[in-house]
Length: 122
Length: 107
Image (cartoon, rainbow over all chains, first blue to last red):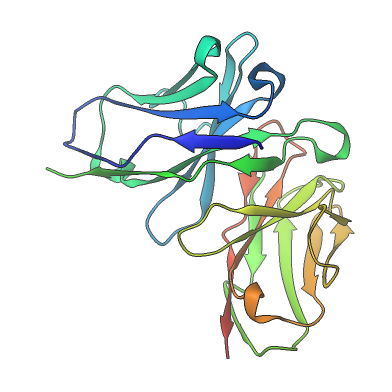
């Protein structure tokens, strides 16, 4: 069974750094790109960026470029989302999702993590 | 970026109703459009890909249509399990974007 399991909720202060994780299982981790998607409280979905686990190539939405980094550790089938300096406006639920990237599915998402709630408050 | 605009933002309907949600793209995305369903506290679920292809396991009361810049998601007979928020997503551009969402509420 394909699963993406994310790390637990975090409470941080502005300016602090944070890394959250997403571990894949039940499939060949390097065969599928992983994306991160933000959902602010009561709001819609925002695509942040994606990574190819084979070579760690990344690209980002302009809205998030330079504010977060995405990385992987292939040896433990885990993707990461990192902030060097959090802002209060980073308070949101963050989902990792697997990109199908095949045929007519293209860059659609078939499996999602359960979400990691990040709260940034003074 | 390609902007995706959904309408309405909220829709009130009754069980058995036919429901239509519209998604408009700011430029031609051909048929590279997906629809997702999200229930409160849950991750989104893929319903439709390439504008009109039903994902495996999704009930046939869901259908998608459209091309270019205008797309629709239709639920032919709304069921209690369908009260949720629906999002479109374009994947014509390498910069992926979602619509703002349509919440389907009980009337």
